Length: 112
Length: 111
Image (cartoon, rainbow over all chains, first blue to last red; front, side, top):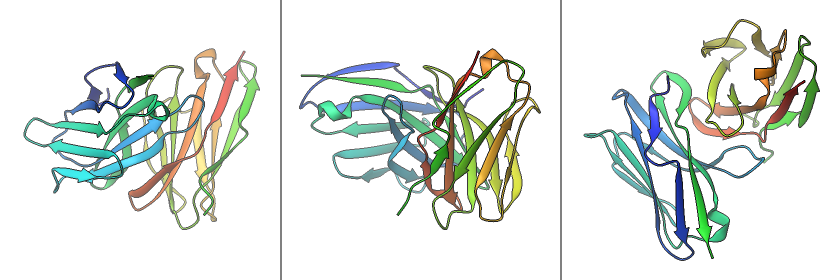
């Protein structure tokens, strides 16, 4: 089975609030992680990535946190907008094995 | 820069037939990956090609196969189609393991 999982299948957030999406992984050998956003009928879109030698990385309105001690990954979205409504997946990757292992995804719904 | 392109966008086949899906990677990317996404579910890894060779295979039966051409484009073949093969098939490409970019997918419907 998949080694990456998400804690919650759905998340409802008020527009303008911050969103936090969590992800647990079980393979301690994974050293590269990616967050993707998938809108209905489209392919996954890269949001942000992080390597295991880092514990935090920031992008535009997004921050990824990596806690290797408890094998936990989170995506924070600042000032959530209606366009952020989508399914969010975390994915993990092992060195020398380029395939990504995905969790089931969290559906984020932004309330106006 | 053109992204990963997949064709066709939609494909309807009858059970028992064969389906061929195509993927063109981002220019400069040598690795191509195929994933299956059943409705409402996550992505399941199918195949990984790099430099024309199959490098890894997911837990799928042998009737799922593919190849990568010298120009790094790829083809996924699904033989003896079953109803449960209906899904969105996603192709991704990367250079080494970074820059992992997905196409928009081929929606395969088996009737």
